[in-house]
Length: 229
Length: 241
Image 1 (spheres, rainbow over the protein chains, first blue to last red):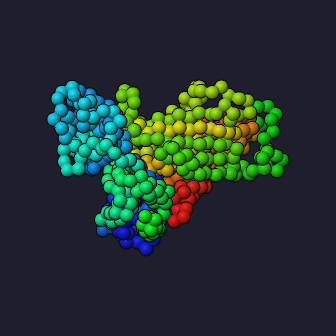
Image 2: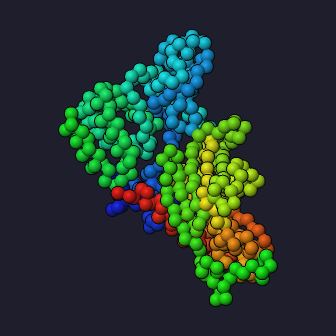
């Protein structure tokens, strides 16, 4: 849970649930205002912050936004562009002009082929949800080693911890490099033992991430991981 | 009189053959998130009906001709397993399953915020494992829970429930004999928060008063089922919290 809840106990709400509130509130994410009532539209934890009611969703798919760092798999190649699967409803389009190399027309496949994994950034999302990716920028590249794991996008904040504290702890102890994509993909690189310990922590987050006391348990588990190495 | 000659569907004391009162529903059990590989899923046992539902998406709608530029399409596939009835049924799509898939999709489109996902498709797969009258209602209830479990934004859940008429008496939640030999059947999809209807079908004849009584029974039953749906969803996520 983010620490922004002003209420004493965070409450789990389901779609269609009428939220009773005495204050003049604004409706945020996961809340709709109809017939003078605030109604939850998703399953998640109800949050009241700065006069705004919102729901921290527990489940849901990745909705790309401009600027997101994503990890994608190349699914198709054309003469002048690539299509990358980024865990969203639509594939991201990476034109050769936004690739990190100078690419001749018709030679896209020489640089990246189907099955390659990339770290990219979302350059643009239009109103019909078409996504354009870019690989021009620091750290954006084709991945050649390590492994990619998946985690629900709603659990990424918890996995990262405040100011990426959990990531730093995990990386330093397991001696791995960890990159978390906003699309719920996590790249881990390092020795096999280190990668395995991070994968176990991801599995733990998958299964227990929606529990109220997850953060304390997770940090305890990271500390235990420390003891093993 | 029953709809089919002398078939007796009510006992002398006014109760039904399975001992239920006229306004009594069969027991309902629901579980959310039973299929690990689906984005959302649900299992519903309504009397002897057993339905499971899996939801996938939203994903890009294929083929492109089914895409809507301003909203998602909901693709429902309702199917009865060959072993779901006492006489094995031929596997695959038939007229009835097409019809139920269509009305279910239309009912779900009225609650899902489809405008949030242009050009996308949300797949809803309903499989009836055991059938005893009221499978479309069990399927709708399962689909609704599975959509919520998948995190798809919705205005409300939908509850599928039916009532009807046997021996000139309005009854709630018809079982197999009542459905086969009764005089009328009125399955509806109800939005429990507002009481609005998402779909309504009627088989047989009902007078206005009988219709109103059916709707009264349906609304009452929808509230009961809604509580079970919410309990199932909350149980999944509050477990161990």
